[in-house]
Image (tube, rainbow, N blue to C red; front, side):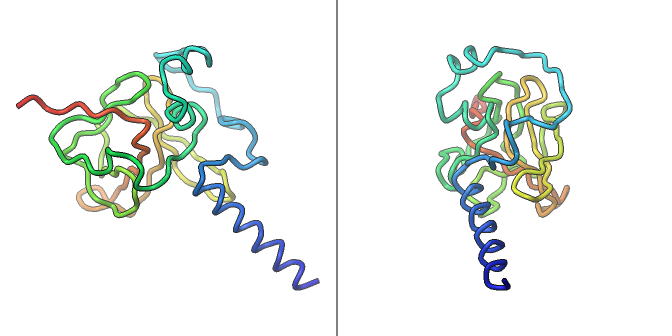
Amino acid sequence: MGSRRRFLVSGSAAMAALAAASGWRALAAGQPGAGKPAETFEVVRSDEQWRQVLTPAQYNVLRQEGTERPYSSPLNDEHRAGIFACAGCQLDLFSSRTKFDSRTGWPSFWASLDNAVGTRTDRSFGMSRTEVHCRRCGGHLGHLFDDGPKPTGLRYCMNGLAMAFKPQAA
């Protein structure tokens, strides 16, 4: 009985880690947004309209709460002055002045722009995290952690696919 229980526990943990690393959604979690309070957003499109304006990879992240592979986004290595905006509705989200190298493989920021993002509790994969979404269209951006640098101590760990970079004019 003990070895069977150990197998089930370690197997479940391995599946959760694999799911998180590959961007799969846990079957028990149901559809993205399931069990979350309904929110209203300024930019509303049908599922088909979102599929027309986003690439399949962007759709997976922004509309299905997927996660891109670490170190796969060119925005992780973007160091020019400018603004990171929502790839779904072009709302300005983050300034390059708050970007830092978190060594996690995803673009990270210690602060968002005022009135740019919303948050809600994400209880997928048997843990509780703070999910970050675009305030205007509700697109999933990533997660917020409290292990960032000063002055805020926050780390907005964002999917590069969820954003577009707008360089600052020289």
